[in-house]
Image 1 (tube, helix red, strand yellow):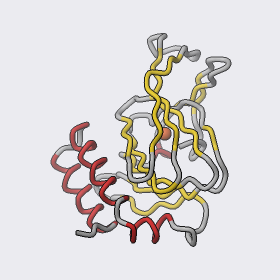
Image 2: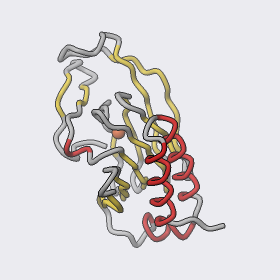
Image 3: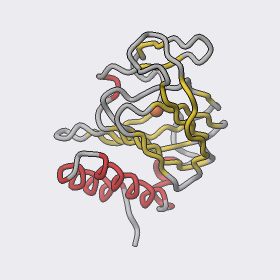
Length: 179
Ligand SMILES: [Fe+2]
């Protein structure tokens, strides 16, 4: 049976109303994989004719979650970063994204951090990864990689940090600076 953006939004709403915590988000992750398995959705929202850039596909007026399409042109390696007091789900539409999950070895309060990689994997089309509250990750994707991201809230409105791996410095992030 086909699945589409409207049904995905309706599922996100009912799941997150019932279960806003990590279990509900995991359910949203599996629904996102279902959405990405739908060729019509991928073509319409992540296909070759879709303009490059970041597009907000939906923002929920009540619960605040967002669904974003990242239609990337150029390859990019992000610094390790968190999603503030939110969470994020990344679902790959085309090409791939190499993910690294990191942990702070320093207790997490100072403005200089020591990070260690704890998990590395490649997100392939149709697969979605989840980053619950406070998780730190970095992403690395090639030219033309496209993905759908679901966040608990508009990340532009909350405090988040990124980490400079060379110096260990912790920086506040500005809106849309990194994903
Ligand atoms: Fe991220």
